[in-house]
Image (cartoon, rainbow, N blue to C red):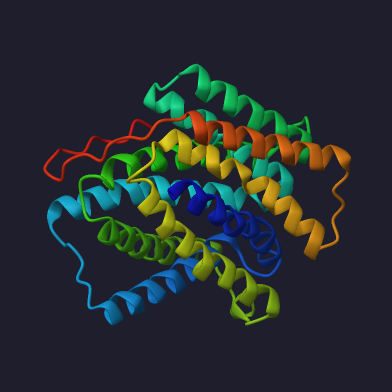
Length: 291
């Protein structure tokens, strides 16, 4: 069941917030992103080699992969850089505003969508209670939410017209190359790459586990509409708060637990009322992202 699989991946996505926040105390954002995606592509290529699975390398695949990667690159850069200037809770709340952006891009403005989204967003507010005053990090993170929403729209369309495994792999490869080309702007030092416990845990969570979660998302978006995928991912901040409470000792009061329950309620309502999209035929022409 794709909905259940996506809900499980939210535990991984939620863990990336505290893991990345801790790792950024040692390493610069773009350098961390390079290590993350480099590790991810190494793992994926090893799996494909064992499976003896070949990638599609035609011009159409590369063009589609570049379009999707462009939005993914913009989203991760803005989110990770923004995380240096705002709190983890603000970052989690603002990032999940892609729940609003996705149906706007797709012009799917049904009542069920807005009711379930509204419940989830209100729950997010109760959970994280973001600061009322915006800073540079909040603005950058809002841009990342818009970019991630555009990427979800791309995946809904493109996974139905090309080989999803090849699309998934090319995105990871292009992301690693893009981060390698941009990380030098930060003038990284050798000490940044010291294999400390914080960096290793951060890379395992984001480079290995999150890569697997991304693969599940690619599979699920062949079966589910983008706005439902976005709504299911609205549980990320709740998971992040639970993990921070359990592992880092951060407090989660009654209001926080109430907000978490509202998020899950909105997610369940949306998953029950949002219809499926029939996969497009392989010969259909993909549309460009509307982001």
